[in-house]
Image (cartoon, rainbow, N blue to C red; front, side, top):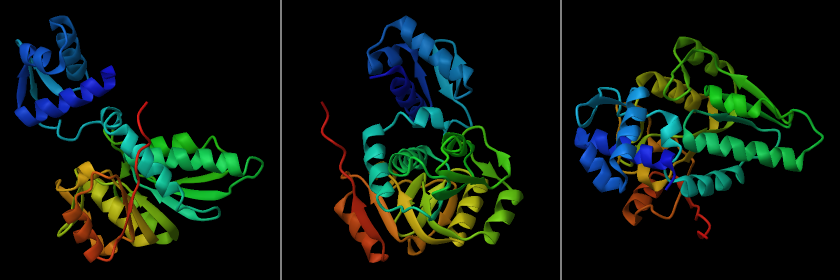
Length: 267
């Protein structure tokens, strides 16, 4: 396990348990006392936890973990989902992405594909996004015409939010939106942590002709503070083989096509 993966898991445990002692970190992660303290110090430096005598405790905002830590989770599943989503995207479309680790992976894979298939062409595909990291990744590729929504950047997700972003989106036409989410409850819809992100994501949904939700199976049964939309607004869900049969059936009853993408074997 890499250090990034270990830190990501450690944040989750501290959020779930409320606090952790150095001894508990040593036991769970099988590391030395010095390594446990360094890991807690690193998370405290990022304001993800509050360092205490002998350990650390969750802070009020640590439920919304910054993307650089979330990116380490379920990486193989997210890559499989991303590759499957890219197969559904086509040259000369207008494709939109909201922020998140899965959509960032999809955007990267789309950029690689366009560069390989259209090496000598400019502006083969147009990308609309409120995620500054996605724009940064794609703007260097001449095949990609990139439009940012504008707005105020959130440090945890790199997403632009606020009235500037929401005002622009009704004025554009999007062929396909690739939507990342924090949680999916089949009866209630799609959720994210931040109300500002949810508002911009809902505006993206309203501007798009086709909605593809890119979400690994860990997002099912998870809710968050702000609702984006209902499943009735979604056309395709791309996920991994961890999706439970009951959840798949509920999604399909809502009229959503389900595509399961299997990660390649390890090794």
